[in-house]
Image (cartoon, rainbow, N blue to C red; front, side, top):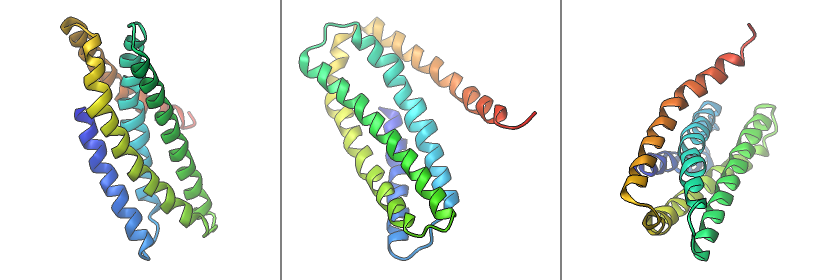
Length: 170
């Protein structure tokens, strides 16, 4: 849940940037690149990755109640929706860069969607799902997951920059 605080701060910045553009400011493609990188790398691959690849996998081995099982499926679907919106933001930025000025409205709309979506998603996890599902685990299992989260994080920086370097011609 600590990671949620940083995600919330970035989404506040994204919301402010959407308002600035809406009020007549110019679209800053570099800001969009930074925001997309943050969401893809930190919020999605790092944070959602730990949820989907570790926590949810461990929960899938437990005899979850129907409500918890449905909540987990809903959270996974919300992660998928966020990925689609970020991809659409990248596409809208590219179209705007090609001179398609109508893409500006889509950029604003997508930034607003992300700024609205993530706080609701985070509240659902922090206030409902995480506290409720923690009860499925023993203290030892929770400690083991924390170690798995740390290992996952340790690999992320290497994964990101290995992909970056592989993208260049040799």
